[in-house]
Image (cartoon, rainbow, N blue to C red; front, top):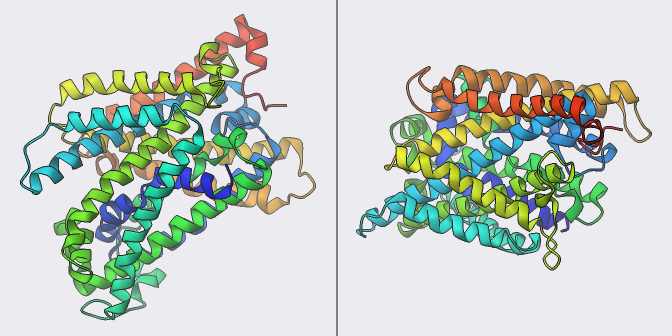
Length: 462
């Protein structure tokens, strides 16, 4: 893959139209008129994370991403714990995609006077399609993701252009959403939490290192490009969505967040676009599922290469050049996870939020851990030619503080992340803790019983 294909592969993870239609209203609810500035600030913060991340990617030329970087920085025990946490987190995210697709498709069909269909039917169909596509070469997935991304961004930009051509909303254009002081009028912590959550996906670029051309150039460019692209899209879309409603934006976001964007695009463009938006949200999540599945498969493959998982999953398909066995294992595991969850919650109500929210907390923990690892690694190895203190220490230190605070906020406001009453679902966090502890415990076992295998963990901690 080149820069464009890699960017599209990881950007699909973010599901841009689903964010614009589904999550930006929540940032407006809590951030008020200053929600737009939250996206500007988030873009800057995550660019700082990307600085340390890509600097580490150049110095640790291995495809393990979080697993390789944390192993090199803070040790193999923590590294394998992070690898298990990454696999579980991305599997939960993948499960959330399938549940969301099922629920949204069922609701859309009913709203168009079609028959009542169970969510799991569409969830199973999407699981089959994603599993088949991800079995083949990564370029097959990239082509599907390219089409989906173009359509998603086109819908968002049609709305943005329409609002501009209409001269804004009832109050015209205002500089207030771009004023940092406006963000202070809302709940800054929760607003930033939602803003950072919707950027996730770009951090997976290094996972595909072995499948891109000139990785030392492609991975950094795709990482920075992905952050800047979604940051610009979300900032502009948030500003113009706020503008479309004027002084009534917060009320619209609070009273009916699901309809805020679809209703606005129906008004500013054409009524047909309201239903089209819901259709695009489904295709957006389908693309996200492909992206997440590919990430999971590559983590499983790398763990197989290091013999932390059975070497059976470390085989590359002789024709397609894909980690086909790891991909198949990921498909089977997510099916085994969703089956009991679906039986326990046949309506699927709230299940997607729980899976998405829990996965998000896990990925945020990993991102904060990587930033710490960058600092520790360069403190131990020294600054290499071409690097500097800003890349190696300052940027990752700021990212550590910002992402660490986000993790604390996510746990503190866990009810907003996964749904339910305050404190009701905190027990779900044990899933993340157990996965990390199992990985770390297994590393300790390998260190004492199989030292040669232990020595090879991370394949990058030299």
